[in-house]
Length: 261
Image (cartoon, rainbow, N blue to C red; front, side, top):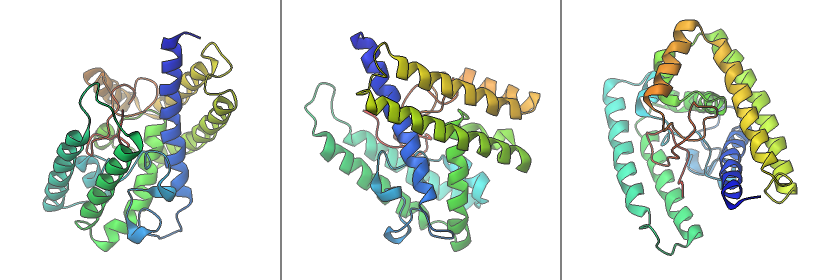
């Protein structure tokens, strides 16, 4: 397999790892527990701090999406936006200069510490009821990301309760499929048995499940989604087929899911 294909496979593995480990962490939280499952309700290291900290934390979900999902006041939204903006600047400052020698473990720890600090600050803005509601909301956000729906477009889609349920079911199946593919890739040493087969299988799964989720939308909603994707070709995080793939962001407010290297 070519060097280019090997790099592509590594990217795919990292993307799916971020999704699988992050989503599975929500399942480990006790019902009614504060976001983050332990650690005083802090979310920076959901599920024991595995992977990139999960695809959906308070620090990573845009303030506008949090405002819509958690019914924030205008004052709360402005405060959270300011926290995320500052965190984004701090995160950029942590990134090494191109070509610099980097201790990846140390850098990851710094990113994770910043993420935890940001989450804690945002938690302080929420009311007790909003904080409790954020557990289910963040889990639903993870489902959208799994099927390629960018977080930023959620308020404009105005999904019905039935649509949310259907998309969550599609994402649940997708999650299991991606976990299976991850196990195959690991067993094959990260190259899917050669030829980029594992990478292709992941891409096909993401596209298939993205298409299923899109089929749940009304024509008007799909038009809104397609327009957003066309206007934001770089995407957000690891969203799947054309909807959230592309530029990997770790900065809070961008819908990212942790530091990207």
